[in-house]
Image (cartoon, helix red, strand yellow):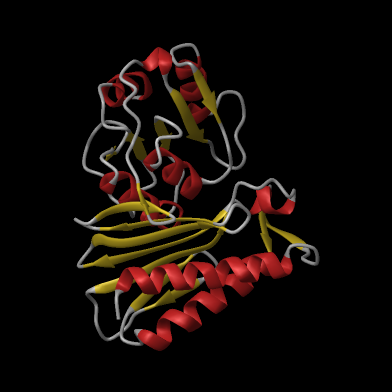
Length: 254
């Protein structure tokens, strides 16, 4: 069974669950302003059940308390059943199911699915990235003052938070900087050429696993903010279309 096909099917299953809960969920706070709904848990359960039936020997990591170690340590599925829960709660249509697969620590397949727009972003290591079967390519923007960029800030952050200070520092150097609430969607949009860069220092593996592969396969660049090698288990990420704006942003952010 093709891993990418499994990721796509599982993401659609998760999306169906999110749609089914859209008008009847209740909201809890995992921590201040860090929301979770029944939809998060139901989506993750459905995704895990589907994939684990096909690959019972694989390991799993999911946002809502999912950690399993399978007998085949080479493979790990990294699942965010609802990336952008606050957006979902407010019916703001910028959220997604994100599913990535590692083999021996390297990302090899990824799916990011927005069930509102019915956009399925897919990537396979060495084979490319696609949106609804159309090949993806990052933008060709080369000047920072012409770039649309996005930042993820910590859920709770005050004016003196270093992440906020970095946001403000970049604000005057780019065409526009946004904060959208879904890292998975940000990375998918970067791969699609809709934005030019995205950074954060507060992400989890499930926020970015699938999206990082999308960006790489669409010709973009992913590092840590200081341009050291990206590590999905580290919360530090700078991603771009791969042009010179990557180094310029790095210099602004470090």
